[in-house]
Amino acid sequence: MLPSELDSLRRTDIPDAYYVPTTVGGHLITPLDRFRASLKQKGLTFSLSYKAEAMDNLDGGVERGADYVHELTLQMHFDLDKLVGLRGWTLHALVMNRVGHQVSTDRLGERYINLMEVYGLTGGVAAHLVDFYLQKTMLDGRLDVAVGRMSLTHVFATSPLLCSFMVTCSAPVILKRAPGFAVYPKATMGGRVRLRPTRDTSVQLGVYQVTPLASNPSGWAWGSERTTGVMLPIEFTWQPFLTDKKLPGHYVFGYARDTSRYADLMTTGAANAIKRDSTPPSAPMNMYWFEGDQMIYRKGGSDQMSGGYLMFGYVHNTPRVAALSDQYYAGFSFNGVVPHRDTDRFGVLWSWYHVSDRLRLNQMYLIDSGQSLGASVLAPQTSSHVIEAYYSIDVMPGLQLQPEFDYMIRPGETTKTPDATLLGMKIIANF
Image (cartoon, rainbow, N blue to C red):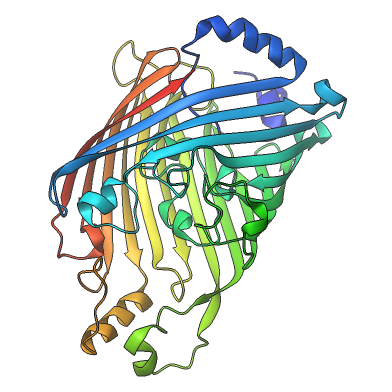
């Protein structure tokens, strides 16, 4: 509510909206609050959270049935100024555990899109090391530098609004499918610099190691990773505060170049012999994204999530080497739609996923030559849609319940599998 010339919030760096283990306010184990405060004064902040997702396929897909996944996350921040006198430096560490089964592959025959976000790359690893990096802030918060092991989706192409959904958290799906885009909980060595040149703008760029997404499933064996190239992302953010009510918006334009060489999707099986073009057998990958959200009303609370937002975005990957080449999404995320429940949140998101035309042509060549597409692909693939709706309920400080509805059109990106209707539940507990 400050006048623009005194708007102190906008004179500092746009803070990392993600990664926090949970968006739940407060803690379930309140007797620890005094202990937490004592540790914070000494320079240590920690958070222990539990997230569970269950999803039941009611109709369509390959078979009916339910699956369950969960993650336990321990996040720690060490204020190195208080601990050892290094002003402006913070050490971040995150360890997590994930278990369960993915409803997309088990019940829908879907290989590209995980309808349950918690299911990931770590398998049954007891303690997966995700983050271990140093961060330095300078120039009154206008310049921020981080270096170490981290996921790109912690700071690039991410949004806390997207992460309130189950499918898209924390970045658009087709970016997370890109081999070189280190998606949580996968982390690689790298660094990024973020500068806020004006009150409403920021630009950040990074350099990250690229390793196969499935390598080093524990996160601890750094020496076992095979480096295939370098990821070079750059992102510009415009964060205006519009109208006399200072309603925040976030408009993000990003590009990333993965220098790794990936096989052309037309160089497999009979397609390699049949294809008529003379393009090289491998190529690097380029990724482009635009993500936008704009608050249209403010209601309750003290942070930038306390209001109703409209959301939209588009992502494009190099179709020669990326199975999913395009994604559009649009939706809304509103809070306070039920009287006297200002912190509850209701959201709907539609996403469209397009399979690379080059991959589809390759599949058509394979069929024409009498070869199989594999057990998981029933026909040449084109596109699919996912409609997701949720209502998030703040039950009490530290506990959130989120009923979920999903409807997937064209599972497996073909018409061979019936559209699927699913109901689920997400539980987030912050201890």
